[in-house]
Image 1 (tube, one colour):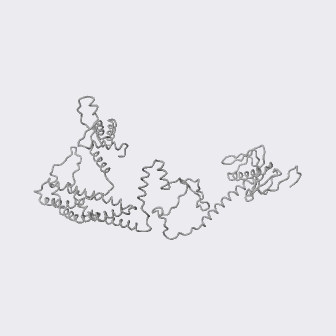
Image 2 (cartoon, rainbow, N blue to C red):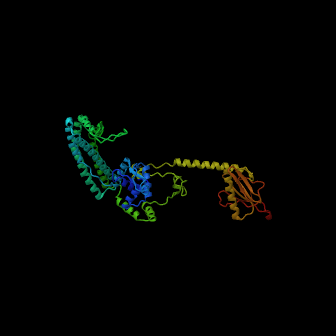
Image 3 (cartoon, rainbow, N blue to C red):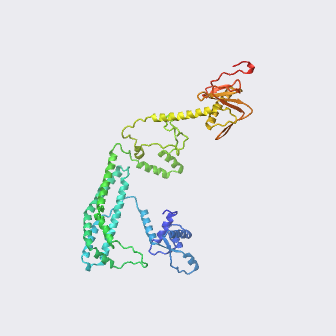
Length: 513
């Protein structure tokens, strides 16, 4: 059933289970399936049969076919027959496929029949010399068969009840019909079990001292024996353990719960769940209206829609739009998660328990306390202080270098130098100055002089070299002027607000600063 072409395997197995001791060749399987309108070539049929042989559902036949010609021998050379476990599995699979989702009636009338049969068995067991072994065997087999069928039907019925009671959309006419089924049929089952189970239990307890006579008479009947000594699966009721298990189902065994008690408990639980559903429907703050009809309507639309329409309808119905991480600005708890942050790396969102488990937005419990921002403020201040200390260290390192060509800087000092050079070049470009430009940061007490030249300035660092083409750079403290500084230089501070220092007149103007 889990393999490809499962329908073909089922059709092949149907041919081998139609009669007893079926011995078929692949070509015969192909012809039989063709009569049923199932087209399968002989080669494909043989491939399916060999797969079933590999899975132990079939086995090769040992019978030598008698054929009149060589062509007929080739036609039927590979023959197969079903195995015991293969036939059992096929019957179970067929039964499962034919089952329906509805309720199954409980064979409650078998309990009265079991009580009558136990009385007949007890009458024969009390006179061991006049026991009719064949009649006794028939009664014993019928008792255990009835018990097995009754327990199977009761399990299926309560499994169906459980599947319906857990539905939160049970309402309206469906709830009314199911309420009638539960109140009437479950009560009917409980009444029959309460009336007949004491008689069955009493018959089993009275029969227990006479079980050796019953088992002895059954052992004298002709039975099946394996030639190789392998164990044979006997019919129920031929061993003492079978009777002990049957008695334990009615009296509970050693401290256990009997079958009738379990049935009554299950009926009470079902009625309690039914009342819970009724209370949920009558409560104004329940889970909301029934959506079963809406979902069935949506399923019908999906069944008739194309692939593109189905994808679009799914997105519209369930809100399955492309995921985007939105940033809320300063109010964001973790500003590192922005629109460009992947959902895999972003932090988890805390969803309230009532919304996550019940889909209910109603606030419960007392109002939560207003969070204290003191710890966050202290953390941000500490991070700002650490960042400022790192920049001051970089500024102190850069201020004592002087000429920067060939100098070696830490990555932090190199990054600060890049900021100051960028501001100096921006000022020079804005004012179209050909003389040197000077950028300084008074907070860090560092200044950088930038002069156009024919040579390059190379700064070395642990993570690589930085080359300033056709520029000469020098650094100093913000209040110092190097002897090699060119006259008429322009200065700007790090804030970039365009505040200029006094311009030095050049030699053509004959002025002095």
